Image: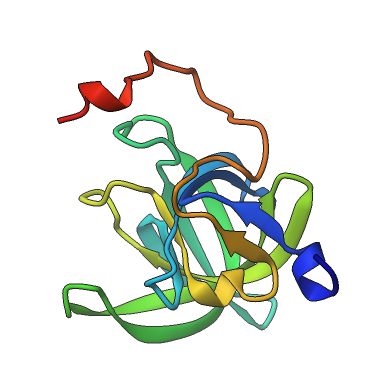
Length: 161
């Protein structure tokens, strides 16, 4: 492999990532080639103005199925956009720009903020964030770095229903 592809990181369909500027050292993200934009689970959003800049303060529950662990986050507000979900639902969302880190690689991405309580993952990494940085193997998981969760019992392929 040569050129640009050699610099891209191979990832699986789900990855442990970090959002260091938001104080989130790890969050499980779905790598979603079907989504154009990236999304982060965020609640209690509040816009405000500080030092001539539009900003947003919000909370994140970084762990799936855990509404008690909370991170308080503050970021510059980049934009407000209408996003259409895969089900056709349109929603107005606040957009921030923040560094994304997978393994030892870090780059800035745009993130829409939305309540993802009903979704399986607290974060989606969309195509715009992947472009020029990631190559996806949809048959694998956690290729971008050390798996940072407590391993549970593994199921054999024959035990799946």
